[in-house]
Image 1: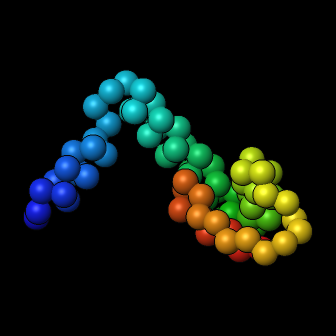
Image 2: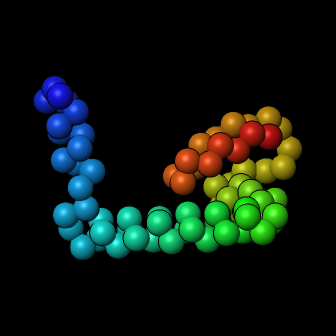
Length: 73
């Protein structure tokens, strides 16, 4: 492992309370989104993510969200 990889791994540790809270919220959102997808409500999740990110229904767009979901329009 080179120094750059080690530095990246260390920077991703959740050492501060704010970083731990943000990581917990991301995990919660991922779980909620996953549950909605399993229920067949993926279109709702997609529409909500697009609205939150300021994307419109018109035009072609490809975007990867923080949760790793790839949105193609």
